[in-house]
Length: 101
Image 1 (cartoon, rainbow, N blue to C red):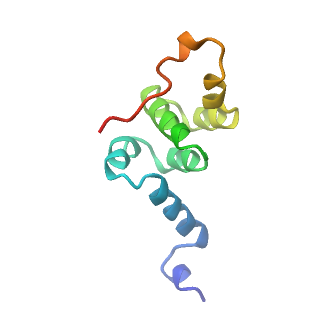
Image 2: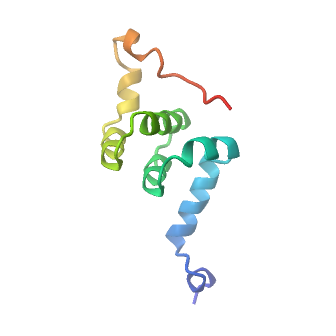
C-alpha cells in the first residue's frame, strides 16, 4: 500500500499540488490572483502551457467574472492565442500585461 493513499492523497492529487506550486510559486501572485478563484478555475488554468496565457486567463476570469464553463470554453478555443493573432490591434492593446505586485 502506498504511503500517499494512506494519507488520503492520490497520485493525481500530488501531481496537481506540484503543478500548482510550479505555476504559482510567487506567493504574491498566488495570493492576489488565485485566492479569488476556486480550485476548479485554477485546475483549468494550470493545464495551459504558456505562462503569459496563465496570467491572461487569471486576470480575465477574475475581472470578467467568467464561469468555470466559460473559462474552459475560452481555453479550449484558444481565446488568448486568437486575440494575439487578431488583425484588429486596437482592440487588444491591453492584452499584454504584467501583474503588478
